Image (spheres, rainbow, N blue to C red):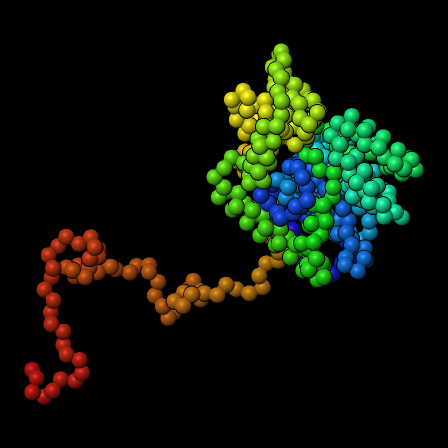
Length: 418
């Protein structure tokens, strides 16, 4: 929360805002990702439309192929100290600890890469494949190199990776040598760690978030931060309502992915082996499926959390439902019950100075405890309006009603009146 006070120069202050939220349907985001990923975070600095560097650092998560803003910060300059400050606050706020079972995607900003390896020791660090490709073929417009690069980046197994790298070496040995220096283990899916249920190797989620905050970034600092906060709050609220209205176990995109796998499983040829293992052939490629360990040789089941066509064919042959083998990260109710938006912590203010004026008294309240113009309630005698006796009132009176004497008419009596 940001508090207004004495003006502080931007070069002497830093601002950090974190939003603890996660939902199956949170923020409109990346439409180009071909798989479903959940437990990943993308980090990036940003530039405005004119290409000027903007000191707005952000952390964005991905869920159901939709971006989830987690935190953003305004710093005076992008350096190692500020990245260290940002990542420490992010880790303590979200309780990341050593970052186990977490994947972090970023560009090649050296300060950020250094901080990730020093704070989130167990986290898997990935680099954006699009940034790698742009820097790799900066001076070349050869589309064949681009196609070969994406085949390498989207290879799930070591065999596919080696085959595609060999094709690149035959096509252009110089490009092959320069690509090896980019550390393919950080951007090719063949080397990604399984268990995070995320196969994303692009930073599109951060770019999508940059698109949504173009208008707020044209405003002054306080107004910009407040509008970004309100924008994320409203979007998350709408996504939460949409997720609550769903009557299905999984989100719409997850169901589309499951149906696609079920339809593709009819082209698979399954051969049963011992110990609940199966061999599945598709397009002259054979992979094993181990139903006890819930693994597939193509790695896509472990990488995305949704059974691929090989595993789907085995599950259907066993007369079971594919939905029962989907990872809990795709389960809508499990995520809604476990995670949600946390309200900001209440800040107790200072007691302040005592008032310099007396309290305003009521209309009939005495100005002082002793007065000569108004009687106090002390020693007053209560008279009953029913029996005209003292000591009680009409509510508790049990005596018969006393005869009321006729009142004298108002005004001076006439001469003919007695």
